[in-house]
Length: 186
Image (cartoon, rainbow, N blue to C red):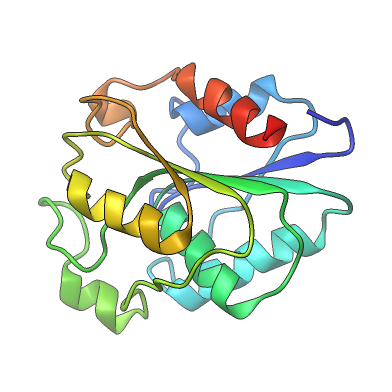
């Protein structure tokens, strides 16, 4: 990866989690950054999209996005509103905000009221890889495949890894760096 390229991590609704693979990977990549957590309006899609835009505006040069869960949806929503050259995006374990979530997550009605639906289906204006687990409780594999097709993303099924978060046993997830390297090299 070029020294001038900045990797920007886009976390999901739980924001910065110390033991999450995104946080751990960010520490391994020199100059990598993370979209800061929201202090207010934590469920607002618009607030999260605007926070991503502010983080991008503070970066000069090429950027690669690494999004997880609702961070994938934030990235896709951002691409509908803003225009900036992005080298590529690694989209991991998208949260299907149009389908019921497990207990402890916002309801479809709460997400809709906060602007998360409908999920944009336009092709993304940058290269992307969508990595999905075959048993993700937040997104059925078939839905993830449909998102990848609609967004023009290369689809990678990573196996039965749950939501690829600490609750699923991740911590470190070395495959993320492999996918990121392949995306940048393409």
